[in-house]
Length: 204
Image 1: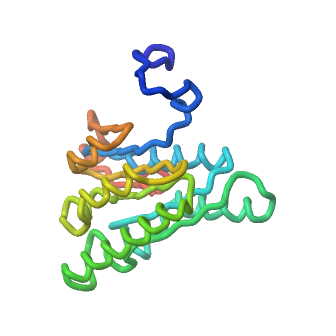
Image 2: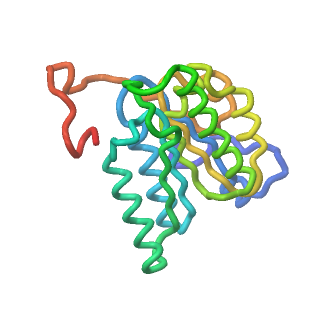
């Protein structure tokens, strides 16, 4: 893709403008850090364009307020007060279940994840947001809590102009196949290799 130009132009009957503005499904996967960070960077660009942003966080603890959440909530308030940017909603899907899974059974966590997905699917059907960040959503799919075929059907048949970004390790092959843009993060070197734990402003 030299100088930002496509290597080929398909014969799909679309104009250059239509093709350029086609809504995308984006998957950020891989073992290395930065998947969510990249997704929120894209959401920041969308907010600047006045898009309606919806963030739906899976797996993270309901008590864990990451830096991006605080920043995007502030941007949402700024939009309400001044009209700058676009509206922002931030939701923790299935609050109370996390990496540590301190509360509830496996069935409880699966049900919470399924409820979260149903909420997202209903919003997509209603064209509620312009850009969705489904953070760590690959995990409930990987664990079998959410049906990947249903997810792909909803994403590929979504109406209107809605971008969807999905993050997390172990992205399902069906999800990768359905996506328009897939990024895989690969570790070359990490501070934890030298025994350094995560720190404020870098990991959260």
